[in-house]
Length: 118
Image (cartoon, rainbow, N blue to C red; front, side, top):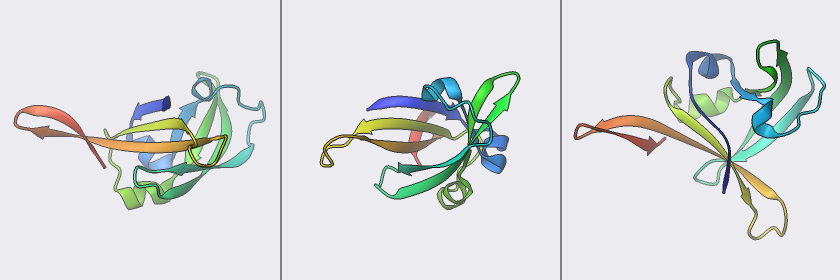
């Protein structure tokens, strides 16, 4: 499983959508405003569809803005949770890849910080 992107969430990510730098995703089309859907699977195998839009910011260049409000709400995501997007080869489907989303929350247990699945 290859990690594509990982980020500790900010209030902006929770409220306005996740921003993924274009460099994390390989070559993005150079069409600002282009909208597409990204199908991901969580750790339970549940499919989620994120609405994605290519945007541009002078400071970071092209990035993918991910609309994921339903996922945020249903998974009760919070500031400082960590989201990781992985790409994994399909086992039964022949060729292609699955995109998996993983969310972890830092909790303190017996004086130690650990990352637990959300």
